[in-house]
Image (tube, rainbow, N blue to C red; front, top):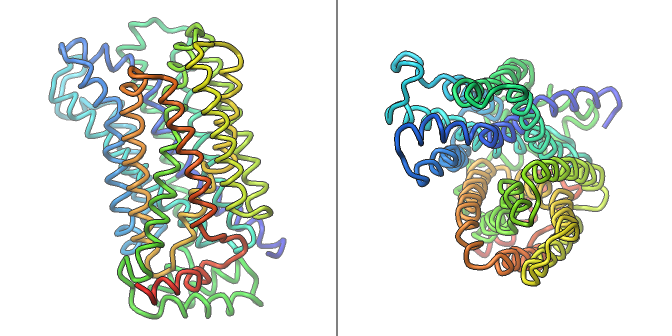
Length: 464
């Protein structure tokens, strides 16, 4: 890539990764508001813990829906317009969750209808997360030159982690120095409303970025596609790239299984393994894990922040190495590290030993995930599918990911009641299986153009 084009592609990538930041922001904002929601809605209405749990996790329902419809939106409205729709959903969710009484209810008078309305706004935000989680990596992969595609798509994972860190400090800043009564009545509203700022910024900046050349070529807008490819790759390469793209998109859009079932199964299993290794348990339940290991509440929150910075640091490691070492080596090394970390935590749990060694094993686990499965899974999902089925196939893979996320997160408390050691041992076993899966079945995509993925799966298409 010519130096003159570097700034252009970096700016486009940074705009797209705001979708990743909002993904992290929206999924983590509930952590600061969860206890206040319990007081404001659940306690005042005399509802049980099941309703509290359903309210806390309602956005996940939207995430699954957003993942499922992302393929339809990306294929019919375009990658850019789909991201604009996600930005609007983030904005509506932020404002609606902050003030669910708008138009129809009286402020300060919680009712079941108001609680339902609040959850509907959270589900709207979840649909935005589901769309962004599928389409942001897809958009970046279709814009980026092949030699730096992995690095640029990995920025999206860094943005997700950064969004989680940002909202933690925003929530802390809102609550700092305020009375518990104020936080339970007003403070939680500011937490949700704060998301409107990055959501609005995302929507405005999207107006100034182009549609992807792959989508434009599929819609027979070759001149526009060539213009964007020229800005990104230089005039000498642009025509050859457009010709290669057109060879894979001139045939009418293929059905999902046109390249055989194997490519779809690989995409789904990448998503499922990313969740079954237990990462969201480590992220969502980190304070509770540390408290159960004997840390005081303040200390557990501090340890959670330490983990957040470790996550960001090792995501940068992935960004710097993914296009040098390749996708498969990073995934396999990460799986081995995760297995060591989780088996270590399991051993500590079985021995009933609680201390700094447990924290170190958790850091080994999360660091290994963040340098591998965290960003690289998104990279692979955005690039392994042939052009003609990419929108549909990514949608299936992302929906599977959110469903697996929900399953692992919801079964964790029940599994812990049975046996903490066996719970962490299960995640360690999944880490081992993920390494074997990648070694045996996942193709290396480093340096390949998106059009070359057609050749990778052609054998399966013929045998399908």
